[in-house]
Image 1 (cartoon, rainbow, N blue to C red):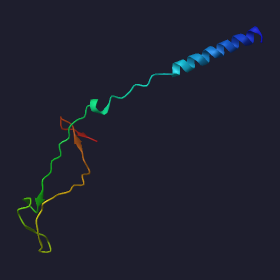
Image 2 (image 1 turned 30 degrees about the vertical axis):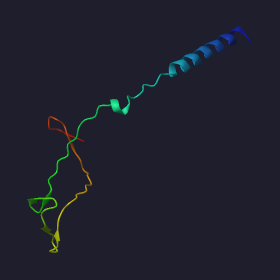
Image 3 (image 1 turned 120 degrees about the vertical axis):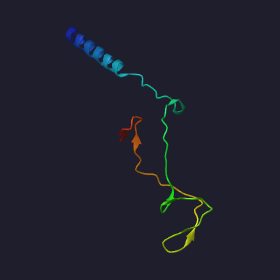
Image 4 (image 1 turned 180 degrees about the vertical axis):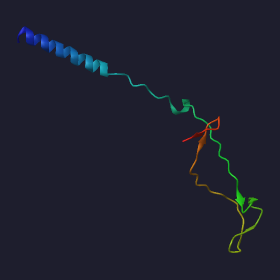
Length: 92
């Protein structure tokens, strides 16, 4: 090998070494789930039967077919939630 080729090889070796070492960056770890800060969400709902407030388990209601029913349990499918900033602006 000639001196010129040796210098080029050494130069390329050093460039590769710097690229390799420079590319090795320690990945920052996320804090564990119990250390993350979460906000609070308050869901409000009004349970109505017609125009009146719903009374659980003690009041009988009549549906459009004339059948009596009482409400003892409610299950929800929550959708179309909009977040509101403390100042009143909506968040998408």
